[in-house]
Amino acid sequence: MSDVADRAEWRIAKDIENAMARARKMPQLVADGHCHYCDEQIAHGFLFCNTDCRDDYQSEQEAKRCAGR
View (cartoon, rainbow, N blue to C red):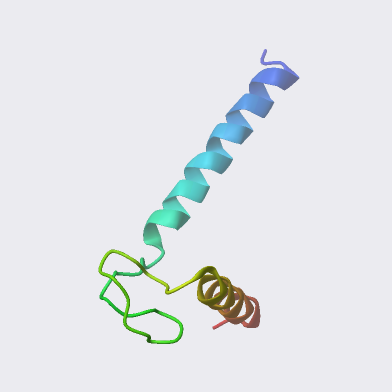
């Protein structure tokens, strides 16, 4: 008979597995030389021109997720 620790370990492993599967399904941003928030031209390899744009983009995306879009 499994004990509480074994069940907790199994639950944690399942939660991690499910979270990783969801993360793999989420679309990823591609660095295209423009900020994904303000469309300012930036160096290749970057997604945002600064931390403010990154934070604003993440806040906007979270609000959309909460609104069901």
